[in-house]
Amino acid sequence: MHELSITRNIVAIASEAANGRRVRAVTLEVGALSGVMADAIAFCFGVVSAETPIEGARLDIRAIDGRGRCRSCGSEFPAPTLYSPCPCGSRDVELIGGEELNIKSLELEEAA
Image (tube, rainbow, N blue to C red; front, side, top):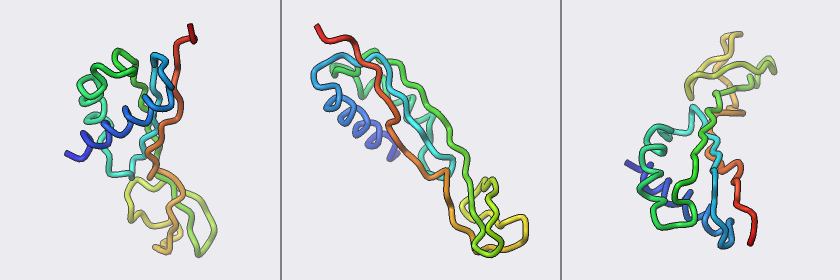
C-alpha cells in the first residue's frame, strides 16, 4: 500500500510548513486518475500523524475529476479513465485534470 508512504510524506511536509505551530486542518486534492486511494490516505492519517504537530487535525480530501483535451478537435471533456476517448472519437487526448495530489491548504493555530 503506497498510500502509507504518501501519508507519511503529507504529514512531514505539513509539519515542516507549520513551523512549530499546531495544525487544525489539512486539505488535500486527490485526482481521480492519480492512482491514489483517498480512503486509504484517510485511514492512515490518524496513525501517521500521532505525536506530530498534525495530531488531531481534521483531514479534508477534495476529489478532482479527470478531464481531457482532444488534440484533434480541441474540445475539453470529462475523462473518467486514463484512456478515455474524446466524444469526437479521437484517442489523441491530453489529460488536463485528475492526476493531482496536492496539499491545498493548512489551517494553523494562532501563534502564541
